[in-house]
Length: 326
Image (cartoon, rainbow, N blue to C red; front, side, top):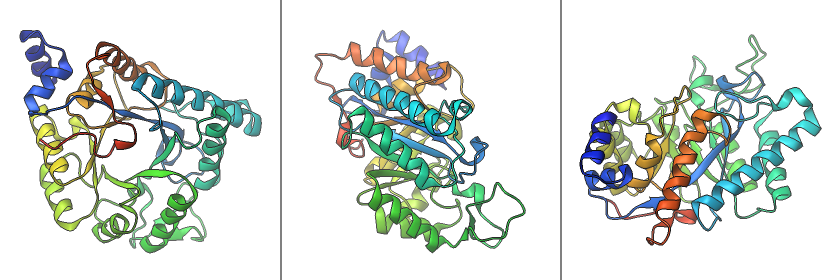
């Protein structure tokens, strides 16, 4: 499907992002806010963190190129902070380029990021995001074990769905948290809906495992008001046509769209053009590190350069609703 899409762009002698825009019937091109995964936990890291990804979103940048600069500066200042506090071994990178220091809890990770943002001089301009990947630490009785990597354990870190809801409340109130992905197991519809109702206005609740970019799952989630943002992974649904359908459904429901890479990636930068052509307004494709992650960011920099002077906006603070639905 990707190959046919590329062939169509070449046959019509148009840039890939413009060809995707026409396929979708989308009225605007938008440069997305990059969501950099800079601290790793969960199943992606050997530390004690249960939650999988701690991200930054430079919403206060004037354009995509400046957003990249801001993200890179925060990333490298975070490296300095971690190295000073935890030693050289703590700045080895994970499969998505983020650091995996020996942290004991999520607040510790968020505090490190806050410090790196302050050192960089971007307080207020860089927001926080998370991919909790809560399905990874669901217990057999439907609770959530925040110490799941240490087995057996005494159960003191096992919390209910409502207990987890309170933890998210702390993140939203204590940090400029604008995105929480997979806060619950994909079958825990009740607590997904509670999280969206309680925090969905100030912080998007993103469905990945919940939705798997499947229009049928999206339809159920819209009906249940289970989340208010789609994680767009074209490999999950299998074709560009179905991906466009999923994005269209989500946009018409008033949801945000975050274009996403995979943990196991190649250097194919297709999703960069996809994010611009579908005006998703946001993209997550790892830290500014490792060639298979940087290939997407470099393509976005090239697109940003091509579109200079063509009145194409950077999503910025409007990353959740950057353009009209199609």
